[in-house]
Image (cartoon, rainbow, N blue to C red; front, top):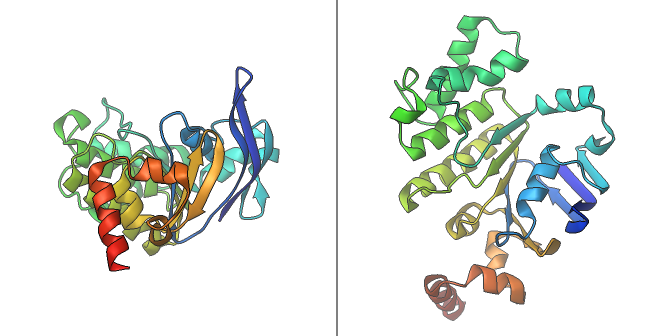
Length: 254
């Protein structure tokens, strides 16, 4: 579990996050949503420890990471897996070398063990016989799956994803969503995903946190979100004609 208490963050005297309280639960897909500039990416990076917050606390279970020194933070980061936007693979490394990268940094495995673990993770994300290819030789969806394999290679307790469906077609996005949902439940991870993808919200958003202008505006589940009366959230969710039609049909059924 990850718990944020009264988190505030400013850049150049402009407050980006204001008094954010949130709990991200293990074994669930926790989504952070909001329009561009709302502060959701800053919140995600603050949870990871990439941004030092100005005020408040962030707990990993009962450990306050805001009170840790660099050595203590490094130990906690061994428990984290991160999928950056676009995958952020190393172009000069093969797929196998990309997945092995965290093992080279943090594990004491032999080379044989590292290779076996990396190939196991590639197979788990449904990638077979691609370990010798390079990022330039695979599709966008495959790159994202390689990034997920790299993120789980250390068997993390916490998984963070920044826009994992960015730039992908709808069908590939569904594959990525289903994979993240399966892995979260399979490994009982605390998964936190920053997303603009409304399909992700409705399909895998077991816990959803809506950030609006730096404030926590709403939180709940993907079942509750369809029937919210929150004006800012409704404007964000149902800005497209298709989403409005879906909501109207569900409302009639209810």
